[in-house]
Every structure is written in C-alpha cells, then in structure tokens.
Amino acid sequence: MIPIPEFFKTMLLEQYGENTVNTIIQGFNQQRPVTLRVNTIKSTKEEVIQELCKEKIAFQEVNWYQDALIIESVREEQIQRLNIYEQGKIYLQSLSSMLPPILLEPKPKQNILDMAAAPGGKTTQMAALSCNKAFITACERNKIRGEKLKYNLQKQGVASVNIMLEDARNLSDFFSFDKILLDAPCSGSGTENVFKKNFTKELIQKSSKTQEILLKKALKILKPGGEMIYSTCSILQDENEKILEKALKNSHAKLIPLKLPKEITCLPSSLKEVAVIAPNRLFEGFFIAKIRG
Ligand code: SAM
Image 1 (cartoon, protein in one colour):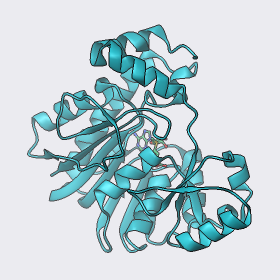
Image 2: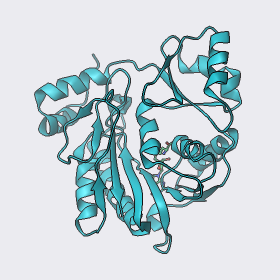
Image 3: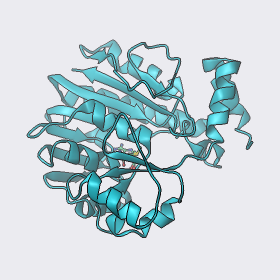
C-alpha cells in the first residue's frame, strides 16, 4: 500500500477515527475500473453497447443510472480509440462525479449556472439530462481549462451553453439562477491526488477559502426557492461541512436531505442531510450537499 501523507492521516483520524480511516486508506489503494456516461444528446445506450460488443469489450450496467457503464477489462486509452469516443457519443466520467447533476435534476428551460465548469463533464451531463434544453451558463476562471470546456461542449453536441471566462467570486449579485451547480475547486482529498506532491496542508487551506467565497456568492445569486448542489472530490470537513455551516449561518437557505442509491457507501458526517461518498473500488471520495434558497 502507498502511504498517505502524515498530516492528512492526522486530519482523517481526528475526523473519522481509526476504523473508518483504515477503510478510507484501503479505498485509496484500489484501482477503479473505467466508467463512462452515454451521451444521450448524440447517441443511445443501445448504440454504445453495440460498439462495445463489436470491439469485444465487456461492460456492466449500473442499477442507479441507466446512462452509466462500468468497464473492467480495458483502460481509458483503449476506450479513447473507439469511434463512439471520437464522435462524442460517450464521456469518460467517474461514477461519483455523475451524482451532482443527477441530484440537481436540470429541466428544459431552467436557467442554470455551472459555477466552476471545466473541463465540462457535469455541464455536458446537465445538458443531456435536460434534453439539451436548459439554458446553462458555464463559468470557468482558467483560460486554458476554458478552451478544454469549449472543445468538450462542441464535441458532445451541447446547445444553449454560454461560456463565461470569469472568476466566479466576482460574478455580479444581479444574476439570478433557477439552479446552480457549484462543483468547487478542492484539494482532491477523496481521490488519488492524496499521493501527489502538490497535496499539502496549504492546498487544503487555500481551497477552503475559495470554497467559502464561492458558496456565499452562489447563495446570493440563487433565486429564492431555487436549488443548488455544492460538491467537491474532498472528504475533509474543512472543505465541506464547515464551509456549509459558515455560508448557511446568515442565510435563509436550507439543506435538503439527499436520497442516494443504496449501492453507495457513505462516510459519517456531522450533517445528516449531506453525503460523503467513501472512496472504494467503484467510487472516488466525494462530497455532495443540496441546498434550497
Ligand atoms: N465541474 C467540472 C467537471 O465536472 O468537469 C470540474 C470542476 S473542477 C473540480 C473545478 C474547476 O473550477 C477548475 O476547472 C478550476 O479551474 C475552476 N475554478 C477554480 N477557481 C475558480 C473560480 N474562482 N471561478 C471559476 N472557476 C474556478
């Protein structure tokens, strides 16, 4: 097993206790299979399955999401060589990261903000879930990542998305959205990122500061009665529960309890309404909260 940094182990032990931390560490060391989402804007599950069968690539379906497939037998590079990939008929995406758009339930004609959008996995999924009929504004601060977002939106055949190359912390308070997805920049503490050199205490602190400002901004520009998702691929309360507590303290907005498929294992949380998805063989560690404004 690859060791995780000592400072991180201490943080996890304080938050979760020894037994849960051992399970988390085992989860980090599992190799997850390739997972993909059928892009229903351009294709159908039947067409994708047909191509996989033609290429003799075995797959499994996912009970809780008809557009997702799990592929155990080959790695991403082999999927990237397929016609269905080249033509934008599928999108490689982790199972955990498919959950925030599903839980936000984007519908045609809704005005939706994707506040930290690149490379666009969840923007394209929201477009597909709304039959390509939601009005989506995709905000991204980083220019190069913004290019990747633009490329992915085109490749996936997404219509009615307006890309905004901006720091979302500076969005005008005069905006007003029916729904917001804030898939916030984070330390990646629920993923393999924990084994990388750039995974430091400072990264966690910097992420928390940005997350708090972004969430407070989101609450300002969410319509009264509108709904939003706050998500990260971190399992640390400094980037999740604590951010929610600070942002919701002086706000009318309320957490809405999440209904997750029973196949998903969650870690304990100080907030009963949210989900902290445990890293394991199928899922990366992820945090999801739903808020009504
Ligand atoms: N939602 C994306 C997806 O599913 O493909 C992943 C988003 S990633 C977790 C966070 C993104 O937020 C990064 O592309 C990062 O460049 C961007 N970002 C960071 N700070 C930002 C800010 N202040 N305003 C807008 N975007 C920001």
